[in-house]
Length: 120
Image (spheres, rainbow, N blue to C red):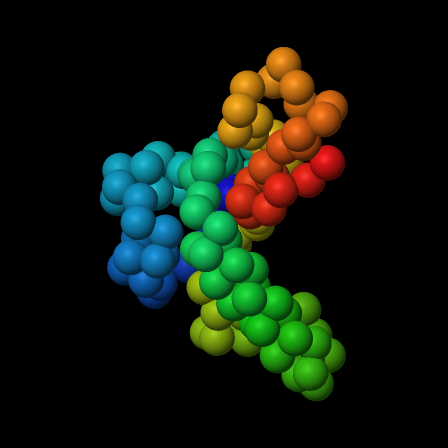
């Protein structure tokens, strides 16, 4: 998961982000420092249920934003700042293969993806 410090409102949402993502406050504080690269990796591996929950919140916030009749950039930024804390988060997909019985027979037995689903 990445965070964009330029889109994070430090006056609200800090406690919610820390509680939801279960990260150390020092990690979030370091990620929110000004830098050249806007997207900062704050969680390398996330549990699937947490990932789905955050993804759903991002989707909901995006859908609500798209239904607003905001014509100016200032109004859009104000709406985002006042109504969502998820605008600063970005989920990245990192495919993982696990071989439950070792990789020697992987072509025959398949693998387990990061959702725990068996694949051939």
